[in-house]
Image 1 (cartoon, rainbow, N blue to C red):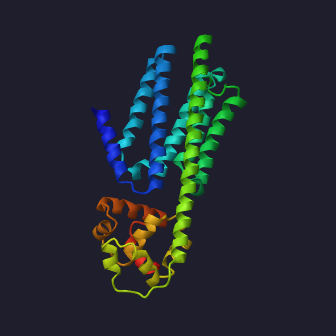
Image 2 (tube, rainbow, N blue to C red):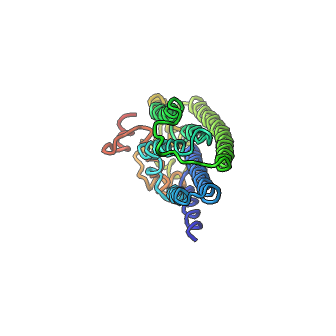
Length: 312
């Protein structure tokens, strides 16, 4: 019943995501979280039934359930960069420890590759490149410590494994890195399609804006918006000819649906009125305004509506 509740909660939360790019980001996050849970529980099976280490098996199971619980966390918490940095560094330390206790023959260091691939989907390289360099650099440092010292730095931690147990570990690590590589390739393909679709949509919108003729302004912008009239953008651009260009020069990562929200804010519509004009829910509009605020990088004390009305 709990798994069914979690699934229902995730689906209901997804319905509020109208922005396709944000939906894809959430999808990447969700599936990679499931990949982590799968890997953790595979480690638990390995330790319980093949290495006879029940303590480590329990640890992996508990951490797996903790990762699974993040599905019901609010997205602002799940996507928090500080929390993600802590998570990736902690996982790096955990692999470093496993590499020490199993030794070079077990190839536990291959798990660094899986984590390094995952950073590309949990972080934005343009904004977080120094964070990515820090995380991947820490993995390289952990790896080099054991290689250069020939696993003698923390020799007292090393545990003895039979040749059969080392073979089990090696087989599992080969499976893990292969599985994560295929998952990474799949997401790279999806991400490329998403980027291409984003630029096509943006280009179409820019062409549409440039082709619209100058129209005599009417006082009926409010009525056009509230009646969901397709001519609203045309009349809006006639009154504010440089509005979209000014926004895109400062914030080029906005997409057409977010620009529409900005236009409706410009004519001083309330959140409820924007929901009616765009045929969505108030919650969906609030989510979209939150994403716009993040892209504008506005501090919490700055009013988004006043910022848009006065600046552009």
